[in-house]
Each structure stands twice: as C-alpha cells, then as structure tokens.
Amino acid sequence: MMKRCLTLSLAFAAAAVVLSAQGKPVKLLISNGMKGAMEELAPQAEKAMGAPLAIQYSSTFGLRKKIEAGESFDATVITSEGVAALTKQGKLTEGSSAYLGRSLLGIGIRTGARKADIRTVAAFKQALLDAKSITYPQDGATRGFIDNMFEKLGIAAQVKPKIILAPSSGASTENVATGKAEFVITLYSEIVPVKGIEVLGPLPGEYATDVKFTAAASTSAQNMDAAKKFIAFMSAPKTAPLLKAKGVEVHP
Image (tube, rainbow, N blue to C red; front, side, top):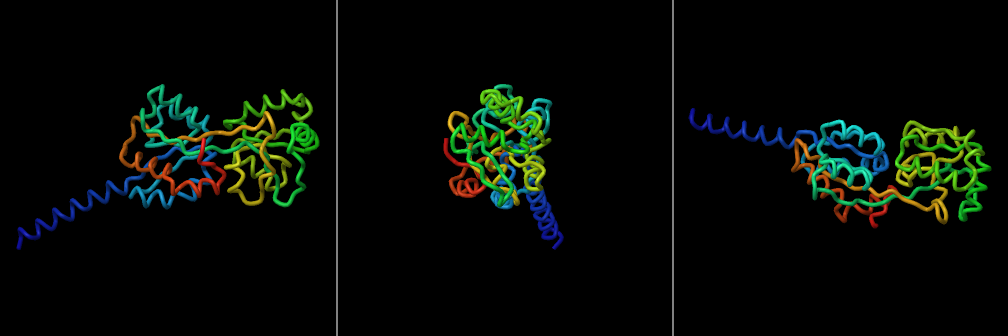
C-alpha cells in the first residue's frame, strides 16, 4: 500500500513538473505594427504552444535598443531589416526567422470624415497642404521616410507647424480618433484595428511604400522550443487570413 502511495506521489510530482514547464510564460517583444494582429491571435497562439504569453509592445526602434542592451526574451516580431541586423549581431538565432507579411504605409482619418483625394502625387500634396493637422509616431519605422517625403514634395516648411509627433503609433491614431489631428500617416496595420478611424488610402506613386515583418527567436531564449512553436504558428497558412484582416498582407 505504502509503495503504491509512493508511486502515485511520484507520478503526481512528475505531472506537476510537466505542467509547470508548459505553463512558463513565453516572453515576446512585438512591434507596434503587429500589435492589432497579435492581440487577436494571442489566445490561439497560447493554445498552440501550451504556454501563456508575456508580451511587450513597442516600436521596432525601441525594441532593437532593448535587445542590443541585453533584454531577456524568447522571440520577437519586428521589421525584417531589424531582424537581419540583430541576427548579424548574434542577438537572434540564425535560421530561426520566418517572414510574416507586409503592411502598407497610408493615411488614416477619423471615421466618417471628409475623404480628401490622395490618388495622385499632386492631389496628395495638396491634401497635405490643406490638412489642418498631421500626426505620426516620432520613433516609428517610417519616421525618416515621412520626413524625407515632405522634403521631396517641397512642403516641409509649410507642414512643419501642423505636425503633431506622437510618442507611439497608438497615440498617433488616438489623435485622429479624438479629433486632435486630421491625418495620421502610419501603417495600415496600425490603422485598421483602431475604432474611430479608417484608412483613406495608401501613399501614391513614387511614395508608395511598406514595412515587412519577420519573427525570430532570441539566441538566449529561456524557452527555445516554445519560441519555435510561436514562430511556426505565426507563419502558418491558417494565420494569414487574420493577419490580412488586421492590415498585414502575407506576401512579399
């Protein structure tokens, strides 16, 4: 009888260890450009991985600084350029990455607001000049591109007084949703999931651009198996429709 009780105790202890391992949170560093999609996918990802997620959102710029400084994490989803750079630095595991998709850079407006014509470069330029205020993230992956675009359009001086630099993509879209700003220039994936705003359209002509996102595992991941499962889940064909619904097109 005592032997049987001891066997059962050992079995329960072993099961507890397994459950504990399965339940260890998987730490993820996720770009703001993938936040809307990730918030929707998180429950499914946890089920597929058999472990809870501990997610930290920020701009790719901010996350790269954390990773370069030695931040502990299991996997990340940032721009493809960021993943390539961090892999070269030995911060991300070689061969672990998976391309997830791209998001167009576009204009967002308050839901129901007047829809300015931005279909041509000339019309787009005039729309920017006519806008009462323009907002975009100050540390977003497209900040440099946007600033340079104003210069190329020859309107940098004219639009400067009405630019509202936001501390994050969430703050920039909130500026438009609340009426603080007329236009937000940011990724579709940062516009589509937000209530109160809608996509006016992509940037036209030579200014059409996008940001590509890639997932990769940390070289110092505490749970490499879970990190790989997360990357496999995010890059699986069945995940593509939801990514597309959140503004991330799953193709080059």
